[in-house]
Length: 305
Image (cartoon, rainbow, N blue to C red; front, side, top):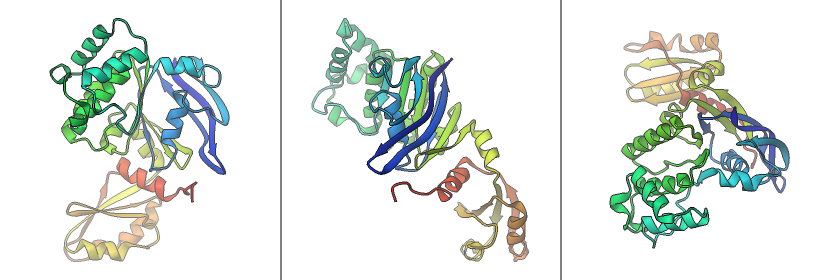
């Protein structure tokens, strides 16, 4: 059974098409990463799916409810975490959660708040003002507020932006724990390591869905070849490679250079003389999700331009 099943979603703002015939399926209990450059339509798509925006075209079901006619029912069973921290900074953690509990008409309020504080490890900070929290604790409060009403679907819009690596890892451990309990998660992110922690990913670029599948499937289907160049004066090597036929990406990675292209024969020819330089070695490398991400971006046209 799919928690999300939408077809040919279109959303326009004036003359600009921000979501352009997006079709997506997300199975129950699945964690799907939603990738794409800034302004690519991720947030708008998520807002359509949680019933906050009505699509101009398209159809589908979220949690079995019709996207066009049952948006209120969808809202009641979805937890939506926005990019921006959206809680009252002059209220404590507990007071913010009490406010949310009353919005959802949860009874008894104290029981729901207490259980949520315990589940997310917030009990010791229950009386701390939200405005004094670090990024990681604000994120934990936002997640607590999203799951207190026990939603079946969690929509997370770049939830870990500006959060340190330890807090990010703890957040993702919590997401996997929730998914094991049957919760479905759609999460937008720019972090490749986070995308790799998802069961599947979908890549959207300027309104169009370009790829979907496991990380391995998306990397394989991109059809890219990667070589790793090592040796002295790699800045000169990079300058020499720029613009050569077959060379589509040249990127420094520590003390190496990653050279990427979609035509292996052309790429081999472009690197042939480089491998003959003194002290330089050229070896096959493994194409990363980031390489694919950059390739998609390079090949897409900004729909707001």
